[in-house]
Length: 320
Ligand SMILES: [Zn+2]
Image (cartoon, rainbow, N blue to C red; front, side, top):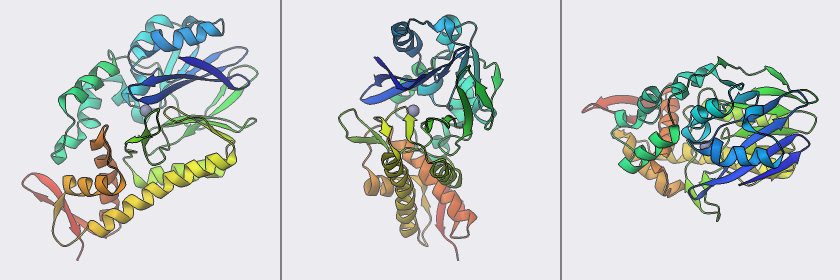
């Protein structure tokens, strides 16, 4: 665990999650402390509390918690946080709220989405997800894009960065050009700490994900604060990262367009082709099928493909 002041009052709390990098963010105003994300079940006590202690602070001092999005590695610490930071106001986007408040809902609609397409995680992944999610925890309120967080001597704007999840949020500090974007843009996927590509970048809407990349280009940040990447410092590095994120979307789109043909194929077929072309991905590989499904949905919307049902599963083929 380490805590680093990236800009005055803006801190990155770094650790690892299995083979991957992992970070939560802290913004310390004169009046209030904001924590962005609570990690997995266990992160609050084992990582965030000792990080705060290095600043002479404690979890009980945290006033505001913003959960970036509904994935277990970003909200799983909520139950523990409730216990250790009783005065903290816990908020996330209304669009992700049902998922991150109730395991039953996220396990069915988000992590179990693949089952409707004949795909699934293996049992050990399910067990890991369940443990990481921690006990169900109710949020205090929703928070939406455009809201200002005035922490005293530092003010942030809440950014709406949908695509990876429907309600993914970030925060923007214009004076320093710092955009804390967490998983809103995911380059060509997730890497081990040694730099090997292991996980795909999942998104559930191609248009929203592209829109988020464009939104961040328009902001032209000096740095991006993520959860799973090394520091992205300077306009050049930010542009390189956003370019790579967009190129992945272009590449996946191209791959699927050339694979679509007159013969109807299931999601599994397109996913395997994409994994071969853009991976292979060793960790959470099935997550690529979410992005593949999003591209196929868009192909149907734009008249390129048609969707049909075959033996209870969706298939796609070229239109006409
Ligand atoms: Zn994540």
